[in-house]
Amino acid sequence: FVDITKTLKPSMAVYEGDPKFENDEIFSIERDGFNLNKISMGTHTGSHIDAPLHFIKNGMSVSEIDDKYFFTNTFLADVSKYKFIDSEVLKKYNLSEVNSLVFKTDSENIFLTKDGAEYILKTGIMLVGTDNMDIEDESCGDFSVHKTLLRNNILIAENLDLKNISEGFYKLYCFPLKIENADGSPIRAFLEK
Image 1 (spheres, rainbow, N blue to C red):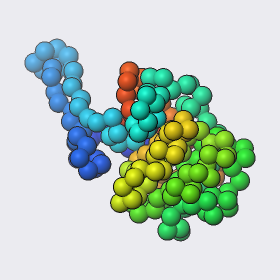
Image 2 (cartoon, rainbow, N blue to C red; image 1 turned 90 degrees about the vertical axis):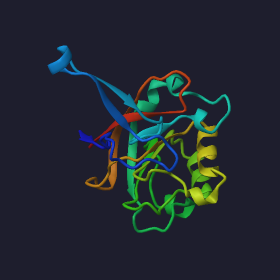
Image 3 (cartoon, rainbow, N blue to C red; image 1 turned 60 degrees about the horizontal axis):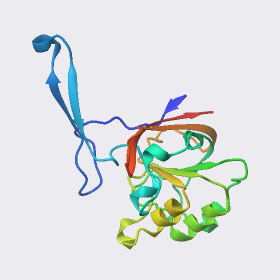
Image 4 (cartoon, rainbow, N blue to C red; image 1 turned 135 degrees about the horizontal axis):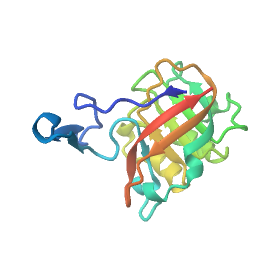
């Protein structure tokens, strides 16, 4: 197994406007005989999953996600040589044997396009991941990639740590916290060859 989860820490980058991660000591062994911390963060902090409720009114929340999303056959596509990920790029990959797809961009500037998201709808993919903090270019402003995927109950995993991972077929294990009415959740994610 390879852990592809980014470590949560106060110094980590968060999406502009999101709350920063905080980990505050409440009790300590020296003072109280035990340790207990209080953590505070947004639901899209670090490596995380977007549930449909993130953009779709009355969409599925994190606590309603079926277990089938957490254990998938995935293809990790190294898309670092492309300017964007559209249907033409996706057609280069054999996605017939997988139900999730992960993009290794090695960049904060390579995003899935709406055309690419619409292509994914035809493949049977039920989870799309990326090493970017966002799967789509926020400058487009309409969140069409998120809405296209999430409206069809295709989950999005963002901010994965893929720096030492090669392109290929894997098993993806992706575990969000079971938070009632949550639009997203930090995850612990692993790949298995």
